[in-house]
Figure 1 (cartoon, helix red, strand yellow):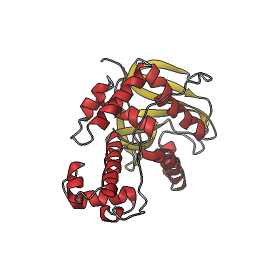
Figure 2 (figure 1 turned 180 degrees about the horizontal axis):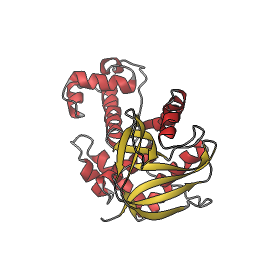
Figure 3 (figure 1 turned 90 degrees about the horizontal axis):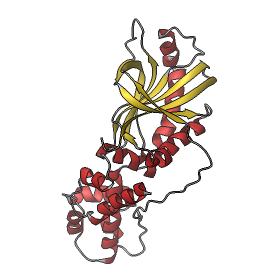
Length: 290
């Protein structure tokens, strides 16, 4: 599959240039991808950003040099892109748990972050149900917070945010503002303001316009006119929702003719109550080679 070799070419480019300043645009070019899409796919497939991968690989190689050579730590820090010994020591200790000087001592355990090799498992035992839809601009409003895709943090923090909004009355007030009973269900969970470089994003529990008045504790978000890839989730269990997200990144995108568009993503809910509903994942897309 071309996408596997393209992704591997991009990783090889990173590895060949770890001692140089690395351009994300040039990395993405090796994968024949837009920079935004490549960064999103890299995070979805690996669980960390390109920047974090580069940082960990450099610190792994630096640790190997420190442990087997007498080269000055300041020189090694400079070699791997750190302007000061202090910055290098801070980053080194965060990854390895010890300072560079301690790492020189015999018997000290250090962490090794291996070079990535892209592999794929083709099961084909379960279909991914989706459709492509054009939709004009619309607005949503609701309560949002900041989270992160690194190491699956968002999958833990988003359910916690829902429980928090239910316990503090925000959820009920949101439903009431659109004329729904407190036992009802909101229209969507919206993921927006993605920052592919550090993995951060914002998540909103949202209802769709129109409303006559938006309470002051809620934010308004405009969704642009987009092409959407819409995926059906077979149940309302969190595990099934997370599995569909995983398969979108690892199976659907690599085999499709589409890339991520830089726009909000939605989980849309349909049903009568918070215990009786179905879910769809809406991904904004553009055709490859745009």
